[in-house]
Amino acid sequence: MLVGYADVELEARGSLGNNSATATAQDSDVSFGAGIDIGVSENTSIGLEYVKYYDNSGVELAATSISLSYKF
Image (cartoon, rainbow, N blue to C red; front, side, top):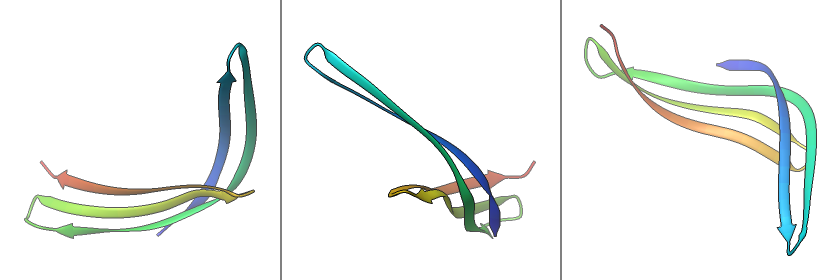
């Protein structure tokens, strides 16, 4: 289980012909997630994790990761 605090800065850029524009926004939100590691041998494990970093103002930032760990 993971609970924390995320500070997010978003930037969007666009152009049309000779015109261009940039918009930025900064906000913060509580982040949370969960994961699991499963041992496949004495030294090796695989893991799966999901974290939601930000969900506010119609914008969501989340990540899912898969990992392979080896202990020396």
